[in-house]
Image (cartoon, rainbow, N blue to C red):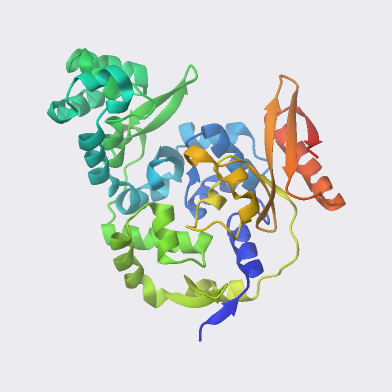
Length: 384
């Protein structure tokens, strides 16, 4: 019979691995991103707050330096087809294991749905359009360095024809994503407040060659180090790889995994992490503010270990929107929002139950940290 573990042990293990029990030093920013398997960055402002939640004394400039100066980080489309910050040193592993497998699915999406949702573009048949010509035009638009979506679309319209412009001039980046999934394009530094794209072979240092199997093994190991114990179904939900692809990866790595029982169900952890899990200290941890789409909420198929059913729809909303949560010992105890003026940031908390005195003190401390991050005064409001 597999060894039984408690949800409390698992929560603390995962919080430790997410730097939510003890924050990391800001000199380790890129390492933190690598160890938590990337930071969901569809909304860069929320991604930056994910890093703020995990790193002590972090300043916004630390993030931009790592992204655009040292290039220790990059932003590209990754798990579940959403933008993420990744460690540049692990980019090839995620490219081979997670990103490239999206190519056939995205091509199928283009062929089946095309641009029907985008009004006037429906007047031409996407199956007849020259995608290769569009991709070549995008590459040409980026050869001289970072370019905004509008600048890229202007080149595409000139090279291919004005009817092709909508394929790249939308927030979905429609066709351009194919180049990103091939590892040829990623995001560059903002230009006058607008996101840019760059060619990865010009932007990043020379990347090592990594086999697909080695990449898959690396990513699974990183995933279990951070989100374990977990199941193949959890890994599938997190990575968006189909179970048909997950099974051989899991089986190949099974000699390094140990089965344990959690809530009467089998889950697996890396053998090297078992002692850490079993001997973990269950001392209560301070309340943490996690922002929109925090990666801590995205690692498993089921979310009931974090959010009780009664509050589920307050956190996981329609259109895949995920609210900011108040996290206490690995469990959501409320939601929150922030409003900012030129002088002050206000955190408004909506607890699921009445806060204790210590939770209120934690909330005040976290809000002051948030104010320091934005270089603003801070204020707490608690909804009754």
